[in-house]
Each structure stands twice: as structure tokens, then as C-alpha cells.
Length: 329
Image 1 (cartoon, helix red, strand yellow):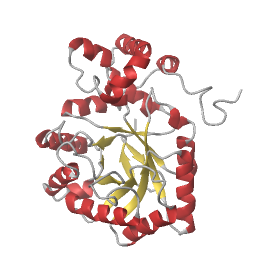
Image 2: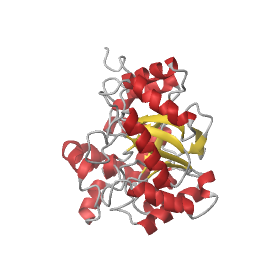
Image 3: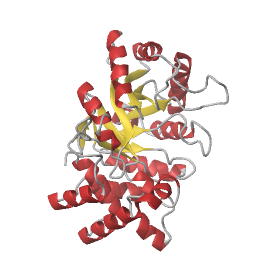
Image 4: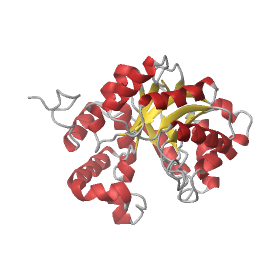
């Protein structure tokens, strides 16, 4: 499998996996986070994804600060990696310290640049759609940051398909490139993006990065880890909430993985990497070992019969495929 793929229509080549940093700070201490980043770069994973509010278990902005210290440790690192961060989530107590107002976008960008210790953010992502702000306001702010050299490309996260279309239409009216990527939740258990998000992204030339590729650990061997008492993450949050409703499917999945002699996390990532949409999974390792497990998925080829069985265990929505054909008889 190619270790580098295009980032949408930007002309940039990025690693086949994105290094997510949501666990840095609180779950993963700085020494281990640095080892994860070093290991990722050594394996050509050159896109690091973060957000201005990550590290909230310590304080909002902590993860960007950690990445900034890591970048400063070597003069070559900043040239070797692409930095993606996000704006939009709550960063303070004031009413204007969240959302996608021009005020918040510009101030947040400047604060992220200071924390990261860099002059430019390679991919500045809107963390979620803000219904209270018109697109002309958003693109005025983003256009200003781009013209100043503070942002190279703009992406979205957690957008609906129609949000992507509306954003692109407004950007084109201002003569801007607009969005180059969308980051959404997508995995064997959550297949909604196949209906409209991925078709919209394809139509407008956006890369699709997928967060929670293992559904918060549910697809990484949650049942086995529960029996062994080792499932710290898969026993809480998104994974725990989904397990009650999907236990039979997860049990079948883990039996299939055992029959294959493969770790469930490896199979879940390999399925994503096999998708015809060319999605780029965002892995959020807490340890170097978890990153190394994700790297093994790059060399895993799932046979056709395994892919067929996964479709039976975790069926697509409706008839499968895109909307509206997925639900039309």
C-alpha cells in the first residue's frame, strides 16, 4: 500500500494515516507523546492533527503547546510535517470565545500560532458548523489569514454534505479555494458519511479524514479486553455507549478477527484503508505500541471474503452506496 496519498486537490502528499493528538495531555504524558511523534515521523506519517482546545484535561491549548515544544526540538521538524489544527470550540468563559465569528477565528489562529511556535498553520479546520455565522463572514476571516500567510489551507470537521456545498459556493464567490478537506467520524459501525458527506467531498475535491476509526476502542477488541480487564478506553465513552446496542455484532467481529489471526484494531483500520473513497484515518494513539499496531494495518490486505463478511456484520445504511439510491427501492 502507498504510504503517501494526495490531500485532496492541494497537490500535497501526506501519510496514509494521520497522527491524531487528542490523547496528548491527561491520557498521554509529554515524554510518551514525543516518542509517538518521533515514531510517526520516522514512518513517514507527516500530517499531525490537533485542535486549539485539545489538552483540556490539563488546560485548553496544552496539546498545541506540547507539539510546539516538540517542533522546537529540531530545526528540520517543521519542514518535515504538516500541522493541522482546529477552531470553533469553547476556549474561554466569554460569549465570543467560541464559534466561527471573524473575531474568534482570527484571535484563535494567532493564539494557535503562538502555542505551536510556528508562522503558518498548514490546515486550519473549522471544528464544527456554526449556524449563527454566515459564510461570507467566515471566508472574510479565512481569506485574511491566508493573505497574511498565517494559514495555507482551510478544512472542515463534522460538517454535513450540504454544509460543504454551501461553504464551497460562498468561497468561490469570493475567489477563494475554499475547503480542501473534511474530517468526520467514520468506521465499520458508523457508516452515515457514505450517504452524502463523501459524495460531497468527492464532488468538490476534498480529502476525507476520519476520526474515531475504531469507534473509541469498540473495534479494537473491546470484548476481549473486558474479559482481560485491560480495556481502559473501550470501557467508557463512545465505545461503552455503543456496545450495549451492538454486542452481537462486536462478538461476531472479534470471532472473525480471531479466525484471521489478526488484532481487531488492525482489521478495523485495514477495512477503512480498503475503502474505494480513499479515506485517511486519523489514529489517536495513547502509546507508541498503539501507533505501531496502527502501522501494521498499512501492510494488511483483507481478502474479498473477509470484506464480504464485514459487510454482513456491519451492514451499510439501506441498500448501501450514496443517497438517495441507498434508500430507494
